[in-house]
Amino acid sequence: MHPRDHIEVFIAMTGCWSATWGGAGEYEIFLESFDVISVPIDEMRVIRNASDSDSWERTILGGTKPSRVEWHENVIQRARDAGFVLDEDGNIQEV
Image (tube, rainbow, N blue to C red; front, side, top):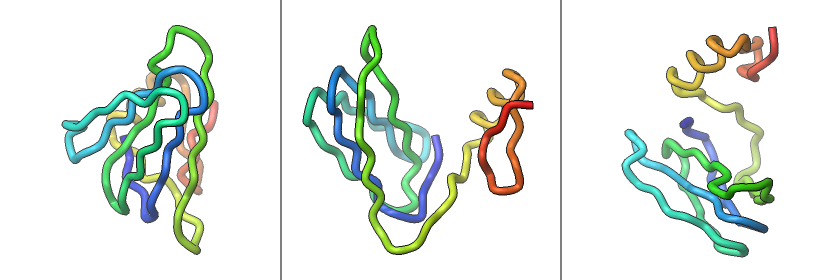
Protein backbone atom coordinates (compact mmCIF):
# COMPACT_ATOMS: atom_id res chain seq x y z
CA MET A 1 0.00 0.00 0.00
CA HIS A 2 1.10 3.52 -0.63
CA PRO A 3 -0.32 7.06 -0.48
CA ARG A 4 -0.24 9.48 -3.41
CA ASP A 5 -0.29 13.28 -3.50
CA HIS A 6 -3.06 13.24 -6.09
CA ILE A 7 -6.43 11.61 -6.67
CA GLU A 8 -6.40 8.25 -8.43
CA VAL A 9 -9.37 6.81 -10.28
CA PHE A 10 -9.35 3.07 -10.95
CA ILE A 11 -11.54 1.50 -13.64
CA ALA A 12 -11.80 -2.27 -13.95
CA MET A 13 -11.73 -3.01 -17.67
CA THR A 14 -11.84 -6.83 -17.51
CA GLY A 15 -11.89 -9.38 -14.74
CA CYS A 16 -12.22 -8.65 -11.03
CA TRP A 17 -10.04 -6.19 -9.11
CA SER A 18 -9.61 -5.60 -5.39
CA ALA A 19 -9.26 -1.95 -4.33
CA THR A 20 -8.05 -1.58 -0.73
CA TRP A 21 -7.57 1.68 1.13
CA GLY A 22 -7.29 3.19 4.61
CA GLY A 23 -4.36 3.66 6.96
CA ALA A 24 -4.27 -0.07 7.76
CA GLY A 25 -6.01 -1.35 4.64
CA GLU A 26 -9.29 -1.65 6.51
CA TYR A 27 -11.52 -0.95 3.50
CA GLU A 28 -11.84 -3.17 0.43
CA ILE A 29 -14.18 -3.33 -2.53
CA PHE A 30 -14.19 -5.64 -5.52
CA LEU A 31 -14.54 -4.04 -8.93
CA GLU A 32 -16.04 -5.85 -11.91
CA SER A 33 -15.77 -4.70 -15.53
CA PHE A 34 -16.38 -0.94 -15.84
CA ASP A 35 -16.79 -0.37 -12.08
CA VAL A 36 -14.99 2.79 -10.94
CA ILE A 37 -13.51 3.96 -7.65
CA SER A 38 -11.80 7.27 -6.85
CA VAL A 39 -9.26 7.38 -4.01
CA PRO A 40 -8.49 10.80 -2.47
CA ILE A 41 -5.14 12.47 -1.89
CA ASP A 42 -2.87 10.99 0.84
CA GLU A 43 -5.05 7.89 1.33
CA MET A 44 -3.12 4.61 1.54
CA ARG A 45 -4.22 2.45 -1.38
CA VAL A 46 -3.54 -0.64 -3.43
CA ILE A 47 -5.29 -2.25 -6.36
CA ARG A 48 -4.67 -5.86 -7.36
CA ASN A 49 -5.96 -8.34 -9.85
CA ALA A 50 -8.39 -10.62 -7.96
CA SER A 51 -9.13 -12.75 -11.04
CA ASP A 52 -7.79 -16.20 -11.80
CA SER A 53 -6.34 -14.90 -15.07
CA ASP A 54 -4.77 -11.78 -16.56
CA SER A 55 -7.06 -8.74 -16.41
CA TRP A 56 -6.88 -5.09 -17.35
CA GLU A 57 -7.55 -1.97 -15.32
CA ARG A 58 -7.12 1.70 -16.12
CA THR A 59 -5.77 4.27 -13.67
CA ILE A 60 -6.43 7.97 -14.12
CA LEU A 61 -4.29 10.39 -12.12
CA GLY A 62 -5.85 13.69 -11.09
CA GLY A 63 -3.92 16.89 -10.63
CA THR A 64 -1.41 19.02 -12.44
CA LYS A 65 1.93 17.92 -11.00
CA PRO A 66 3.75 14.62 -11.32
CA SER A 67 4.30 12.69 -8.15
CA ARG A 68 6.13 9.66 -6.91
CA VAL A 69 4.95 6.66 -4.99
CA GLU A 70 5.62 6.63 -1.26
CA TRP A 71 5.97 2.88 -0.70
CA HIS A 72 4.76 1.32 2.54
CA GLU A 73 7.66 -0.27 4.47
CA ASN A 74 6.08 -3.73 4.03
CA VAL A 75 6.27 -3.30 0.24
CA ILE A 76 9.89 -2.15 0.42
CA GLN A 77 10.84 -5.15 2.58
CA ARG A 78 9.05 -7.62 0.29
CA ALA A 79 10.81 -6.05 -2.70
CA ARG A 80 14.20 -6.41 -0.95
CA ASP A 81 13.41 -10.03 -0.08
CA ALA A 82 12.69 -10.67 -3.77
CA GLY A 83 15.97 -9.06 -4.90
CA PHE A 84 14.79 -5.54 -5.73
CA VAL A 85 15.87 -2.09 -4.47
CA LEU A 86 14.55 1.45 -4.61
CA ASP A 87 16.39 3.77 -6.99
CA GLU A 88 17.01 7.47 -6.25
CA ASP A 89 13.59 8.35 -7.71
CA GLY A 90 11.71 5.88 -5.52
CA ASN A 91 11.14 3.32 -8.28
CA ILE A 92 11.52 -0.38 -7.51
CA GLN A 93 14.35 -1.81 -9.63
CA GLU A 94 15.82 -5.26 -10.04
CA VAL A 95 19.29 -5.62 -8.47
